Image (cartoon, rainbow, N blue to C red; front, side, top):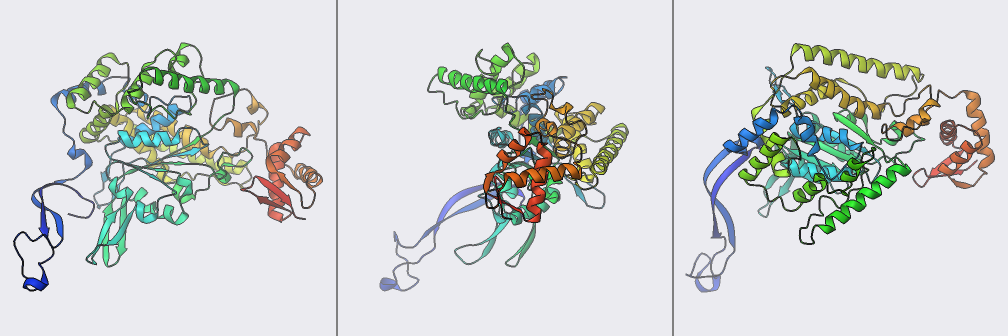
Length: 565
């Protein structure tokens, strides 16, 4: 079997002595009975072996589970039930689309093998890029728990060898391969937190694993190819820790286009500052702590609901209070139950939970039921596109490319898109559409699947891509749209291309405000210019021009500026 293949082995654990007896009492090879000398080495005596072609082959389904899963798949609202079951303890208007994207990642598309032997990946990669305290890490943790195979790692503590494969020398001096996180997650997902903290060389090492889904090794006389058929769910912060509205998206995203193009969906997660939203957050967090402590100290259900620093829905009334835990909503109880030990791992408990949700349509699937349903759908269904879906996807992709080209031309051709729109994004739309059909156990991708895939792509990758595009109606964009989108704050600052006169006026103000040798806070300088009638975006651009000319230096991760001449 090639390296990376999963095998089910039946073996007997045994011990054997690797050392001889006492040389002084009987020679080098003499052994005495009941001699305690030598080293005992454990080994496995294999008596049976079974090869598994995929992770789904290891799953076994009882008749009750299959019946419940088929009833569940026949519901018209199965999509809403499933995304409602993704991290139910984390709520908020901006988290709805993120949960749906993670749901598509867990189910994945259909892996294809072409007649010439080329393989097309069906796994979906998702990147969450945004401010701290927006529950990115909690989403990663939950995804690794609910996936059939899940591996969690942090970018700062991971190297290229730790993510892919390494060659290790054993005690006898022989070399052997040791698989990394992406090899161990074959058939599942690998969650990489702090993706931006990885060294560039280590990020380049996973290019092959993310697209070709293989890892080529040529070290110490070992030349082989390992399988890495896994989805990547990554979380990263912008360059300066928080998203800077005065900088473009390409300046905030410190990732190369080669790695960005390998992500099917890229979400720009923003922490919008608003008094009403902040009060909702406080009510939600306090309700979680009060509700969790009131249920008894011995339940231990704080793992899944303790760090809920995501904001809740932007609406009001009893629905928000229930989401906040004040009215004892089922989400909070479900989150506490799913985080405290996962006692419902038996087939009967899984079938009961799936049947209850399938018949009533209320509540959520717990983690064991969700994991088993994902395995069932991956085993039983492999959707394909039809001619109608082909035409819709083709026309939509051509229109998206044309829109990006027009925005670049309107910007004078100076600013390129932060996230390139290539044929990989067309394949991403295909995979997301197939995953939506797989949730219903449908062998054909329907038109509503295409529409939902296009919507997810527009609210994620296209929104992040257009965050730095200038808008002609900058003044109208400053209307009170508190939580309408992740790029609303960037759009509020958007203006037309500044004229040379505006830049000269802004530079004149900056020279009068910044004396030679003075060190000031960059944000404060821009705010002072805005208070005196200067446009904040034009002021920031003028400051960047002065930095490029060498008149001003940026310090402390571009938070401070110093005029040198």
